[in-house]
Amino acid sequence: MTKPYKTLDDISALCGDITGKRVLVREDLNVPMAEGAVSDDTRLRAAVPTVAELADRGAVVLVLAHFGRPKGVSSPQLSLAQVTRPFEQVLGRPVRYIDWDGAGDAVATLAPGDIALLENTRFFAGEEKNAPDVVERFAALGDLYVNDAFSAAHRAHASTEGLARALPAFAGRQMEAELDALEKALGDPEHPVAAVVGGAKVSTKLDVLRHLVARVDHLIIGGGMANTFLAARGVNVGKSLCEHELASVADGIMAAADAAGCTVHLPYDVVVAAEFRANPPVRTVNVHEVAAYEMILDVGPAAVEALGDVLKNCRTLVWNGPMGAFETPPFDAATVALARTAAALTGDGGLVSVAGGGDTVAALNQAGVADRFTFVSTAGGAFLEWMEGRELPGVAALAR
Ligand code: ADP
Ligand code: MG
Image (cartoon, rainbow, N blue to C red; front, side):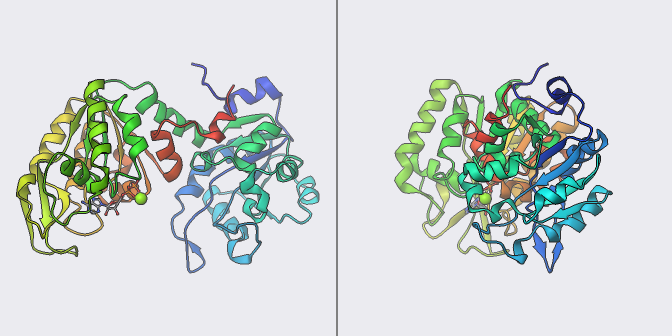
């Protein structure tokens, strides 16, 4: 099936043999560092398939990436030079670091199959402004452009969007995998579809909820945001995190769900505590029994059991946001239990499960099930914007 965007499989047909061609590859190498070492190399590993494939095909591979938020000011602390060795190790091939000064001359010395990492794109103030002079400066170094950084695709920056307009542009393998998984989960999913939306606040996910109610059969609301929906229905949520001023918005979302034939699931039992700390005294109660001094910090076990049954009848699941305050025990119980059910159903072949969001990924890792989901997106902001149904500029620019 032809994809709506161009991939590495289209390069030969459109641009001929790429031996010796200079390919600018935008990756997400914004890895966390601790004491001078990379503390999580997930993003480095994600970059390997595309970089290795292009090098094997004889291209001169020039990796572009940002690192931290230098806001146009160069500094050794935010130099990608320190990521060059770790990237080499993950890649299992030599990587040449190239500074912006004299980059053109350095690139000219590279041979087919060579791989180089260019300095932090955000050392140019114009990168985040998608400034034409920065686009030109990058474009002058290459013949082709490959965007492999889905997680940066919600920003129209010079290296994520501008370049795709300046050079023949293609999606890399990681970008392709991400877009395929997201398409399977929400673009053209097998029904019934369930969405789990949790996390702290409704206000940060209003557009996500509005987009989902028209597309999914079951909307499972958990986390702090469930409190706002419960309160809108007249439940006294005590001292829980709750955006009371959004009651009418919550009502509107529930009405839109009704009209679209989407069933909204709110917890009917909850885990409450009088203090928010690790292992305080807790009670598991019906939502109508929360005392004025208590906080709802997790979904209760009866609701989790019922939600597991909902998932058993679904073919597709998209998940963003934890069901409870999972960082603080024992309020991870619902998230962990539901994640394990989803993982088991996925393993049985009955469910396509796609999850994303910074805290969601951490929670799935904590539950030990991240690798048993069909796809876990590590793209925070881009994943959420995609869940809102927005067009991502970095993806739009790769359209056929
Ligand atoms: P993501 O990063 O996956 O999009 P969010 O940032 O929206 O998720 O939400 C995650 C946060 O929500 C976590 O820090 C978690 O502790 C918090 N949270 C979940 N449930 C509750 C609750 N009942 N009360 C307070 N905070 C909660
Ligand atoms: Mg978060």
